[in-house]
Length: 163
Image 1 (cartoon, one colour):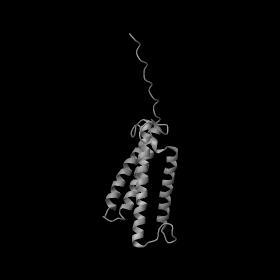
Image 2 (cartoon, rainbow, N blue to C red):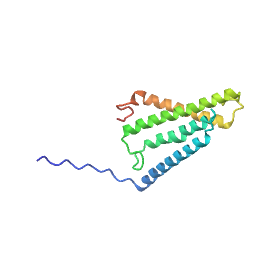
Image 3 (cartoon, helix red, strand yellow):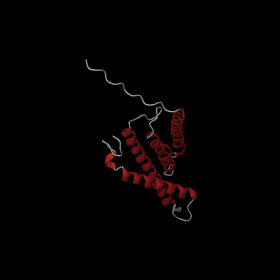
Image 4 (tube, rainbow, N blue to C red):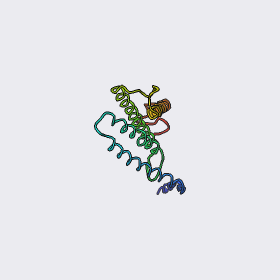
């Protein structure tokens, strides 16, 4: 008879502090989902303006953090192969960018319809200036990552070291 196959090597156990950090990240993720659901419920009043906080909350605290968290190989969270995590990360970031740009478009439309100053004028609020700057920087980083990992890698078969 053929010899038995060699035993599968077991990965080294995670250090206690690593487990604590991973479980904290999972708790933060659950908290962000709860806060996002609450803010979406509280913000929606049927107006066009209501979509600004909804889209921004979906984009940055929820989708962006989830995209970062999915790249971790945590036992209590997203224990997936690297290629699957990489693709999920990219799609979540695309969702975050789409929601963020949507939130900016909503604010632009609302300000245009009411004749209010935009973020690039001297009369704009700090909230408008910092928010637009942060959102545009986020989009710039996303475009930079597209240069490193082209769209061809988003579907199947690799790209960015995954697969």
